[in-house]
Image (cartoon, rainbow, N blue to C red):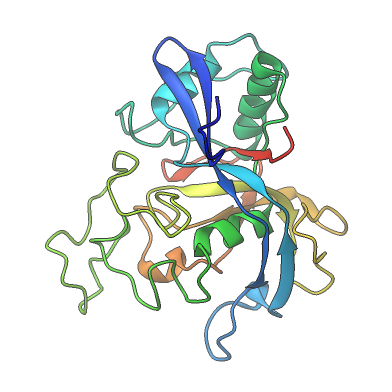
Length: 259
């Protein structure tokens, strides 16, 4: 069901489980890092990308949501309903590979008849920034009052808790200006794209960049509870084989606006 302003979309997954997605309005932004002396080569060269409107999960997929979908009939591969290392139904699901996330999307599509998917890498970064052009959606700096990451070596932070050593329930920290939670830290989030070593040749329309990519490796974004603030930058990218999983890998769901 959509709200009166059609900004929120809620999908019922059965029993008391719902998936909430927010409408991300179309726009353009500069993808990648603009800082000459920081960032990795994989974040460069910075380029303007145009994004069409789409829906994105308000939160990473939670363990409750995962369990609801993992219990649906198999489409292409098996899913463990109790896969997470950290047990809290309101925390993000963890220990999830890219292949697992794709199977989740397939089951969700079969249930709802809607084309649920992982976001493209460009969509993810645009949504993370929330209209900003800074390192983080909160500005040029971040603290462990604003996100769940390892701040144990961040001496300039005023947060009382530096390192939580695990995931936290979604929505614990402030949302960005688009109303999205946990875009920095908590769990790395899988994107649809195969890995490219840099942005040379990237399409400017925000779509999944398939051409020339390494299909064995997929992109993760956002950092995690186990990594420092540098890894949580909006422009930062990580790659891993699509079958790999760790207790700091999760994902969130996207849906085209015309669904």
